[in-house]
Image 1 (cartoon, one colour):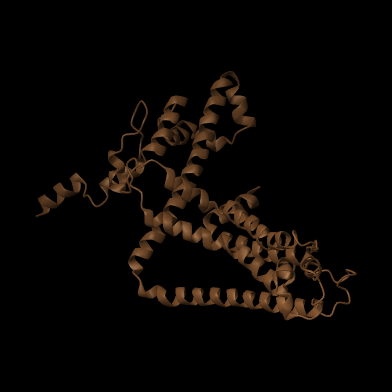
Image 2 (image 1 turned 120 degrees about the horizontal axis):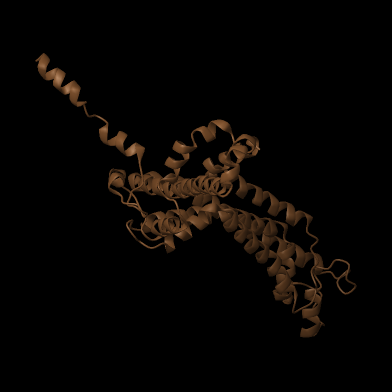
Length: 340
């Protein structure tokens, strides 16, 4: 159990690296799916283009949606975009940065699928075999337009009786495959050039603004994780208190059998401090509502002035230490004055 907890904490603390790994796995999965896919063109004039383009673009859409679903930052971005302003204003630059980061990772697997299909050429031949000009190839001079369309739609089917020994079948297949591979290599070259220009021209822009945007986008993600962890810890202690109160007559037996003795020895202090004065459901609901509608401003110095929702002010042990940091005790000041 501890091992799984360590793995889960590693994934939480290294979410960006984990997302890069997931995108890489999706890209490899897309290549594996295409190589293991049994492609069968219908070889019919009205269905070839629908089938070919569907195989070329529908799986990338599914992979793109999977990339959005698996990326945790997509949910964080939507929450940041739709949340009420409250005590903290929204920064559109942060939302744009998170959106671009999400889109870049989600587009890796779909683009690889499209490039692989174009380099292979089967989908392109199936989709556009009926759209080429038959006058460029021999063997269609004596055929009617309907027969020509039927013959052209049979080009992807090697074992079809109508086009099995036709002199133009291989020429049409080579012609369409060349176009498909040219498009595939062109798209790959354009993507490489865009990535190179993005890397090369990045230092020319304002790096301070980029660092600020990246910092606060990471802050939003980490803040959400810490808030969820704190809520889980608070809920555990709250449930612990409720259960002990319910089994008040059996409290000693529960402490000996069910709970850890050192933890119960500090129950009156540690858990009470961790509950922060929240002792009922209404207080917790008000606090969660206040967190959603009125998030505190990004100013730690105002933490000591924050009035929580509840019957009493929440205790903040760290606030006293921060406020007393750098101050000299009164006795020490008196002793120094007398020495002088």
